[in-house]
Image (cartoon, rainbow, N blue to C red; front, top):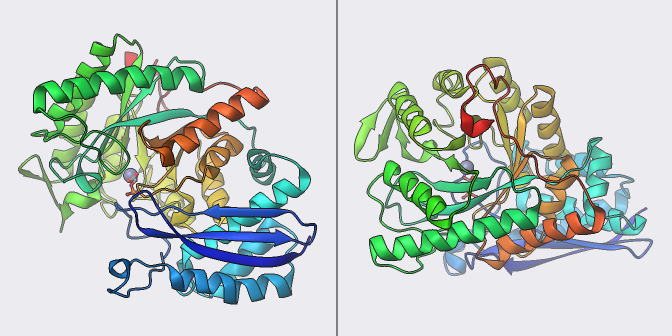
Length: 431
Ligand code: PGA
Ligand code: ZN
């Protein structure tokens, strides 16, 4: 069904920074809109996010150029070419841009259009977005098990500690509602602990997590374990985003006041896994430390997922390289790292073909749009990473998961998390 209108707006994200919203109308009258998120702790291989660069407006972060491209070149192309399906639209706008990674027209504009089109097509057929996505991907839809932000450091907070995010994952909750009820208790206990230990009530980081002045990573992890035990909840594991690219410089890591090489960081992480109930390590090493990653995976194997974010950037070529090198066993999937739904699905397929786990992820700068929940459900992703349970741009997605679970009675969150060779040396946290 042909497209009769493409419009766009500059709207604000959860950091109060501009981002892009696209609105699209099909000849049938069906409409779809989508807003895109933005990262702060970005990978070097991410698709290009177009910002105006005018220092007099939003300190250069305006998105009027991207909006202009949507109303101009993208709209002209879409109305003239009348793409018949998602793949044709996405391939067409990639070709229109003519660069790798939407360096000309902006991946933020491209993704907004791609998702607005998906919404319009789903609406036209009277099906939910997650079902549309599962048909495109050929997947069995399922409710993902969330990893939920508790504490932040690094680029998501004041940089008081290098470790970027410590998240909690209730392994046996059985439904999203129960996951949220469990995490509420843990988060509340964490807030009380932080108040007692650091004398502060609610210092919130970008994803809504608490950000007290921990002196090092181990203290941050211990505080999470203490919060879990104070909450009285059982079976709650930790997942960690180390985001190591951001404290790596010319082959050296600067963490907790010390300088380490890759082997040193792997030892440090291995020590955390021995001491704390961690089931996933994201970006344990830097995005270009390709020699270190296979060793990290070997050390983590069966104890925690080796999850690649900056390493992979939802990019098929990087995923294939990591598969060949046995550098990871799980993909963090962020659609705006590639710029279209079709590209995100290709990354998903490449990772799944290797038997990897999939974690669909939000960005630190989010909007109230909830398409992320539908994406994760549609793909049948193992996990979803949205941030904490305290800010509406995060809750829009959690609440959408609750709604999907209720309305369509989809399978509940997985009770198990482990690396692909689990069992060989599996720890009790993973069983
Ligand atoms: P970002 O952080 O959205 O700031 O990139 C999320 C992450 O690193 O996983
Ligand atoms: Zn990350």
